[in-house]
Each structure stands twice: as structure tokens, then as C-alpha cells.
Image (cartoon, rainbow, N blue to C red; front, side):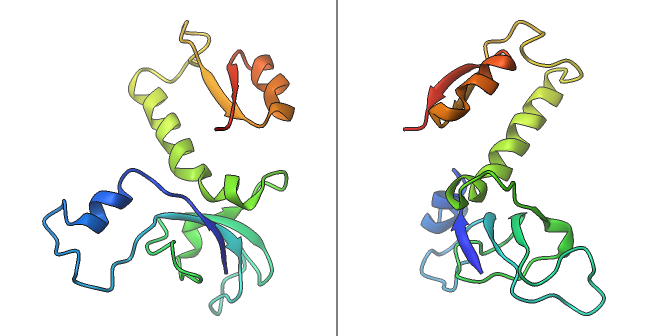
Length: 139
């Protein structure tokens, strides 16, 4: 059961027809990441169980109330995150990781002299500072 889905820059163009598709050609499977609770598993799957709280990336159709994804697309949800935060974690996290890799991410961005800005709830600003980031509040 999807509890929250990430909204990403690719979603509007996919829905609007900007990729040469007819936006009226329903159904459209929007969304690529979500957070939720496992409601069923296929036979032979032992990595997750019914009731597990998970986040999924490359979960086509993640805007739906329920979505079927391969077990490889699922990871445990961080226990300290709200559904809304967990639902949008993976695309932004993967983007940040790949960006660092593309620019020589074998060293951390702060160590390379980059200014790193981290968005978090004010209660989580101290850990961001500890990592060398400049904290800003959501919103």
C-alpha cells in the first residue's frame, strides 16, 4: 500500500505529452518512487515480508494506491522518516550520488571544497552541520 509518492521533474513531461506521447492515451503510469507497506509477496521471496515498511525506486506507477514492483526495487524505509520524506528520498538521493560520481565523487563534496546545502527539519540541522553542510529548513 503506497503511503506517499515522490513527485519528480520527469512526471509532468511524462503526463503532458512532452515526450511525444498522447496524454489522453490512458492509463498513464506516473511516478517512479514511493514509500509504503508491503501487502503481498510472490512465492519464493524472502527479502521482504507482508507488513514491512519500505521505499521503492523505479516503481512504475508509484502514484497509485498500490503498486507491484520487483523485490530489487525495494529497500527498508528509514525508521526515523515520515512517509512524505521517505516517499521522495530515492530519486533525490540517487541524483546526488550520481552527481558526485560524475564529478569525481571518490571524495566527499565538502572535502573537495564544495558548498553543500542540506534540507531537513530543524531538529536534524546539527547532524547536517557535523557533516559540513549548510542546513536549511524544508519549505
